Length: 74
Image 1 (cartoon, rainbow, N blue to C red):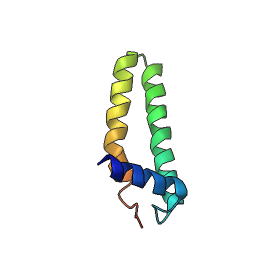
Image 2: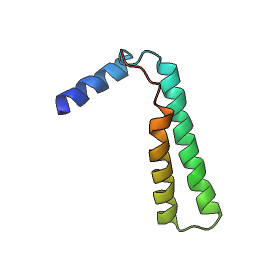
Image 3: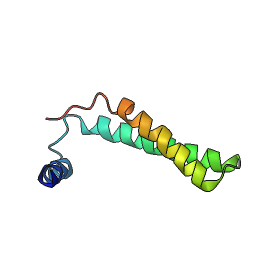
Image 4: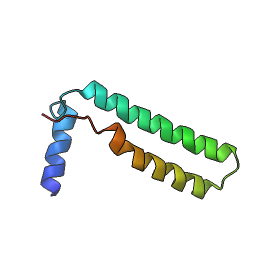
């Protein structure tokens, strides 16, 4: 299992794992920006820090599969 993860990581870093890496990076950055924005908004409206982190993690964790559903591997 660790060998598979290590091999996939090496291919990703070499740029040989994804067919369209620009789409992947765009979608991941969209998810990261959305998560940070949700966290900052939660903090701004006065929600407890721990609760804000939990909420933003859950929402973005549920959204990432939908953001990355069209990612194609080689």
